[in-house]
Image 1: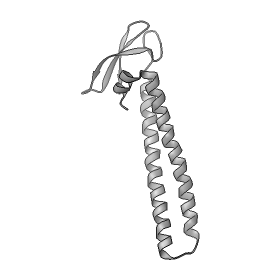
Image 2: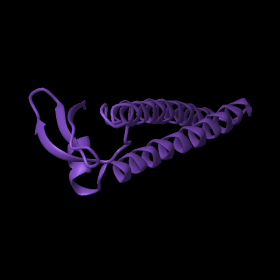
Image 3: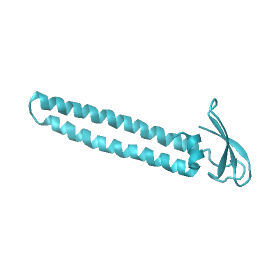
Image 4: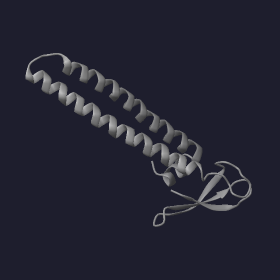
Length: 126
């Protein structure tokens, strides 16, 4: 979910929580793929006919590919959420994630927000 859409629909804190949950779900998928990769590699050690070896090799490749994709997605979601969270402090009063969306400029990917405590405006880079 994009930052602007998430702030509009859920608020920043809920958006941040959902981004972290989604990223950690990808981490769990990475761990499951690592276990599947180890199991598939062990299955290739058993001497069997060429069709079974081919299926085992495909399982190794699929587990590795899905695991790498899930790891990259985990890191991308986590870094995006942390990048936004590092900018969520009001520079004037220091309140964390207590702001409202003022303006979103899609061309520059900047989001102007206003603090609920002191009404200070600043921009968050998406």
